[in-house]
Length: 312
Length: 316
Image 1 (cartoon, rainbow over the protein chains, first blue to last red):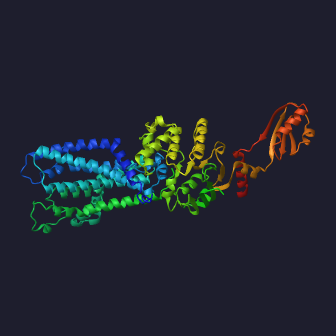
Image 2 (image 1 turned 45 degrees about the vertical axis):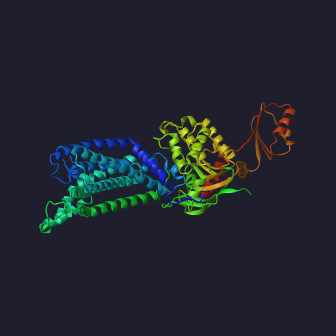
Image 3 (image 1 turned 90 degrees about the horizontal axis):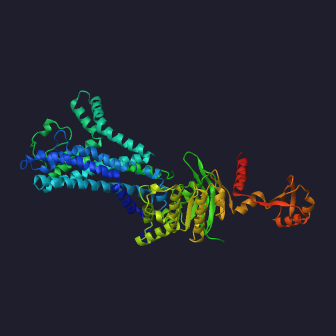
């Protein structure tokens, strides 16, 4: 009895298991997984066909599978930047308000747990199921590459691919947290789904245009200022952060993200790959931004949830 | 002195917008009794209940549940108190068993004990044959029953039931009240039950409290409340077959304060005690034919209405 006398996270494992179970068995998750497997499979297959011709010439063959595209099939990276947000939104958009709609919240919260454990459990459950889906996809790509190309990946390639996996997971979690936030604010799950998708479309399609207009308005005729403002503003969009970080880690020849002047390139060995540590350093700001955004949005949602009345 | 399992003192809830939802409510729940919180919708019953469970902060006042303060140690309270919310909901994509299993897992029982408790409760509530059906297929009454099963599984000291009979057909209401009575008699629980259907619920309650606009107007046994409101006088209605003057006959019966004739053959007596047998005997001795003799009882609804009018008059 003296044990389990009610520490702050009592019951977290129960909520986690239930949510993980729900997510992995839900129809929407199955549909999304099939969609991702089909599209990503096609893209990887096309990339393998393209890359087959240059086996032996490129030291980073495995990594180029993620970034290669051949019209009309987009690259694996582009596909993921579309589909991962969708997965995050699908997991999060009704996380909290469906409990209100089903009137299950008072029943669950009258059990011996604290209120925030429910939110933590839901977040961890969806994080785990997303990690699982992405990990299986990642293994699928690597296995596929070895099977078709017959070249075993080097340690560096695997570590770079691992970092790419981590970035993709962070990207997905960010969109999950955004959807979770809207599911706390909106009482109807259809509203929160629409708002989350609107948010996604905004950053995907409208934000780049708005960025350009804004940077011209700010920079005027000074083209360096315009370019710098543009890239700074564009990085507000998670999509840009994701693409930049992925490209820098998957393509070792990337030396800089953003605006570089000619004199800054003086003495650089163009086209030669950076070591893993340097590439990782290059994307460190992007990773930090992901963490910060996730924590910030989750905290707002948490505060809102804690202050909410549980009555329907 | 009976054991108090729950004690509420001057409990007040004022919302930030200035609305007073609960106003200085004080009452106690004794061990092994059923206490009815009765009053119309919006009279502060559910708000009070949520504060008892620590699911809502009180603005003022104190609550003690089995010696624990629900705001300071909510887990200790929630471990020992079961709550059936107003129109309870379940996860519709899960089965009845899975739904209850989920909430039961929070109790930290081992697997065998958990399954045994769930099965026992399902048998008692007569849902055992539906345990593997999805909640989607359940009617409102079945969901309420499942809620009762969940209350039972926790084996609590106190059960708090919010509007348990709402929306049920009369037959189910009777069955429900039987189950609730068995909570007290067989399972040793103290029960707090809230309802706006006064007459349905009064039959199971040892004591009731009448709520109106956030305040607890009065509480006690139904008899006490009736006497408080209408005095100790008994009212007897008599209908005779013929129109005869009986004031001479009744004059000799002890205990009648007032005799009134309201229609040919219809009489009302105000008495200090129940004098029905004496009255009948006297009338029969005088060869009068009696159609009916009734002792008029005050229902809880009469009492409530009368209290409510008083409160209204005072506030106006």
